[in-house]
Length: 227
Image 1: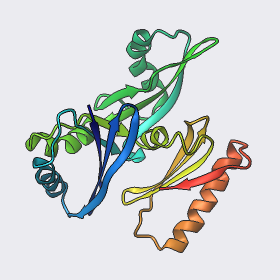
Image 2: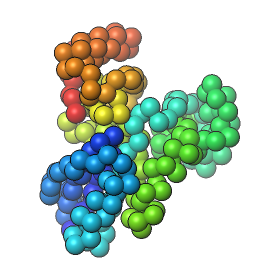
Image 3: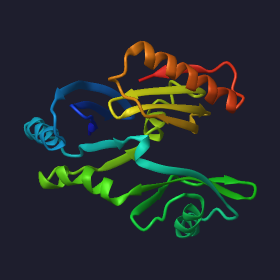
Image 4: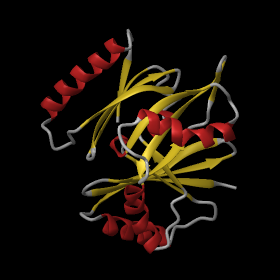
């Protein structure tokens, strides 16, 4: 049976939508579109109207928070059991972040085993931000099955195209540069400017930060893929 994954990008003024189908392990693009709207509630209402006559059993909706929405760290543990790591995660993350985690939700990627235990990429996201993102969907009864976090969501989706290099994502919410090694996020930087900055100024700033990021990690001969 054909299954569809519907990717949603909610910007400041535009809703972007990408629909993919997956059948027998093959993924194909069904459609890509965008609709200009000023408010998030209007964007989600348009999405509901669009999907009303085109909903399929097994549809999965996915959205992504910008990298600026989270505080992230790569943590090391002297054990590799996922349940133990999940239990210890809030305490270890709190010790490394400059904020108290009372108002945050913590999440992690699957642990990666090492000779001494495991490492894990963990993030803390404000609960108020999650509520702000999910409320319009809940109000209209639209199930948001996946809420991921940039840049990890982008790198995972582009793994077949960019195994090593620097990924540049220029979005309305801001611009991020991600250092990718072996198809995984190795390091990233979030730049506070969005698409309203003149293109020439964006290009100079992106080039400057990309060079600094690459040199800081002693990365040579990288390729850059821009979204």
